[in-house]
Amino acid sequence: MAGHYSAKTIVNYVCGMCAWHVPHRLTWSLNNMETEALLKASISLAPASARRSKREPYTIELIIAICEQLNLSNPLDAAVFACLTTAFFTTARAGEFTIPRLNAFNPAIHVKPSNVSDTHDCQNLHMKTFFLPRTKSALEGEEVSWAKQTGPSDPEEALTNHLRINEPPTTMLYSLIAIMTHTIH
Image 1: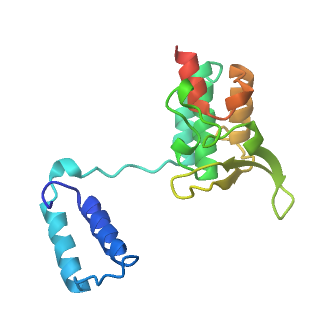
Image 2 (image 1 turned 135 degrees about the vertical axis):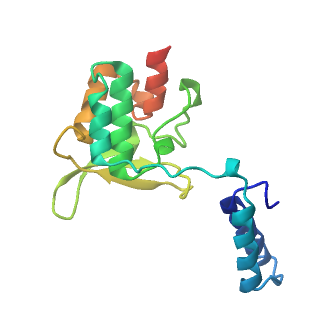
């Protein structure tokens, strides 16, 4: 296995095997020192093709720079920017607000209008709250929120613009990639 997979993949496999032993009431026979030595070896043996270069994180400055390259009266650009700002300010994965194509929308797992509400925080400040029916880490769903921001990265303005430009179907109002796909075809 070593030399074919990234070190992270091998760590995940080892952790998975160790975790499998617990519910099956079996003893995990590798001690911590042996496991660490194996994992360190896997790092040095991992092929270059299995390593990803570090990427810069998204920042407000980067979002503004992206916005400056978009035409927010264009349906695709409006949808992309609304999705970007919503994912960023809710600290959600982009995949939790997107679908790969129009016919992939599933109301049981994708955000729909009934999953979006206007709420207030403990200081009575307005927030837009999204219930994500399913996420990578919470299969039963979770709520994420954003509040109005100042400046060109404001998710409220981006979402309002997207809804005005695209007039998306109410059945999948917030599945922004569906709207992007629709505007491309």
